Length: 255
Image 1: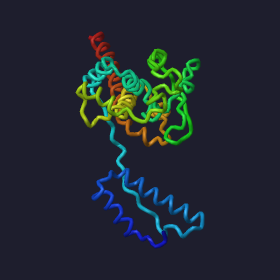
Image 2: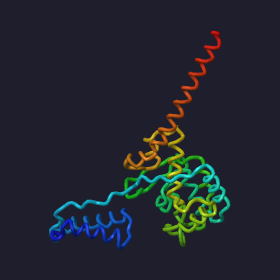
Image 3: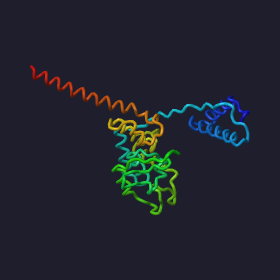
Image 4: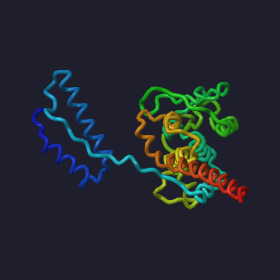
């Protein structure tokens, strides 16, 4: 590794981005793996590690997907009509709770505390386990959820009752029937819809939203700040109209 120079890394980046047509996030993962291997080799005294710090490609994580009221209504209708109960209920769960696809794949019945009203998110994205509230809609869905493999510990099991690894085709099929744009990601996009609805309601602060989304870094939640600001502006306008109305009414009385 000590023989690798910055120019070698630049060439690798260009090869991955242009020749292999990989996305910046994937390139970042490749370079991160290289760093880990270098650190491992140096710690085990196998050889010297890299003599410089690798500069990772910048990732744009600010993309926020959303649906307007008409699109969301069409999607809800398509979900209700679809015969694939597993896919339909997973999409509903994202809308009701904001859970990630990976969290739904790993969700077990033992993780759901119906008595206390919480869902335990075990090992979310490799981080410390957390819990989110079990609201009435999610509770009703889970209590009536069809179990294709009664002995499976998973809420949304895959083949033979094992942990599910994919449901892309099924949820995309529902999305297409609803006429939702292809760029909208069926599950991850609904997580954004969930967050956007809460932020724009004006009733949920960003700290609470961060906890509901199980974001470790508050900067991830900050992407919804403008929606919260819009809600605050609307609330402020309501106050202004009330004051103005009182002033006008008093003025009329004095006449």
